[in-house]
Length: 259
Image (cartoon, rainbow, N blue to C red; front, side, top):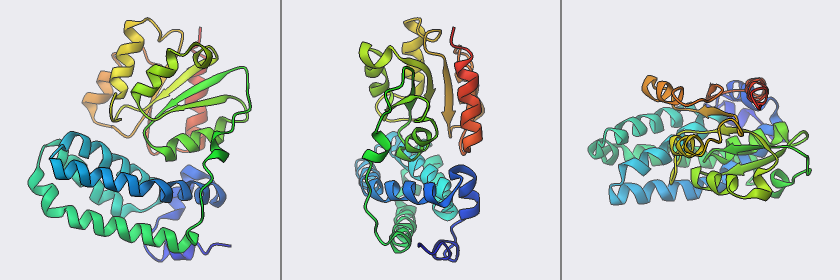
């Protein structure tokens, strides 16, 4: 049995994290996913910094911030959040000056998780098995943490179709076999390649928002983005971090708008 005190004594706010994950079993399973995907995320952060692509850098540190916040790694979340703000302001000076601080804390968290987990293996197929229900929901989010969390909540009742970004979401919507069972969409806004607003534009321009009632699940909480999202005929907006009860409530509300 894993010793949660390893995390707690090293600053992890596990109690707060369990408001999202509900129990330690779900927390541990999702933490394994985080451990498997974070090296790729770090490499993207380094690459975008190296070429001075502050727009994509901001997206990646936003994702790192969100993951850290979900698991209770508040120090890393705060540092990543500051990098997100400064990169959005195209402040490469700040990013460069404080990059080592970001990497040092990220590596500290990774080593802490490895110590706690015993470097457990990840079987992502456990999250991808579908029960072949007659109805589906489409979850569009670049965070594997959020996709897996929502999958686990609803997989007993729905086929949970996941998309990593807006492009994948649009491809799924255009796939008749996959889209015919979709009853609702849960959509993030801040994603690479094609963002949530571009997906909303596509749905609106093709008159699909009645067919696929859509709610926003996002960590973007600035007034301008929220007001912009509500200009589309969406059902509702759920801000991260959220818990299982919040997700169930917004999906029920979204499904009830399916005419």
